Length: 104
Ligand code: SF4
Image (cartoon, rainbow, N blue to C red; front, side, top):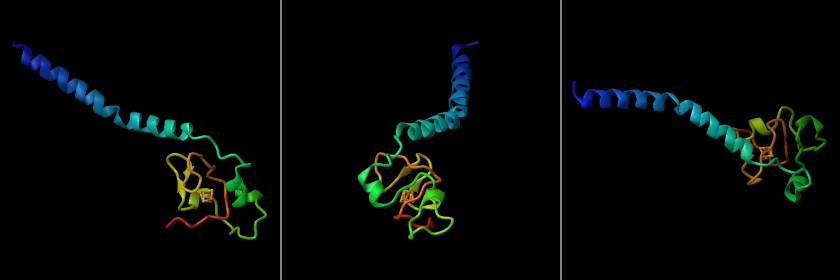
């Protein structure tokens, strides 16, 4: 037997192993991206201006609409926990601020 079938078999096995690990690697990258963002500090000037709270149930803002929160806001990036108006920070899915806009 020549070396070619062995190399081909090894290549196929390595390819199968590599392909089977793609979802795991993607999940690890997603978790790492989420972990990499610091939580939005409540004393952040923009957060204060927009009345950001980590739990929508705590807001007393007259702009609050029942049922609204970061998780259903179009500015929320679920994969990373980021908010597009607070670059570099993560917000809680249960949070809320006055810039909330319904996810379409
Ligand atoms: S803009 Fe939306 S996602 Fe960002 S903090 Fe406000 S409610 Fe949450």
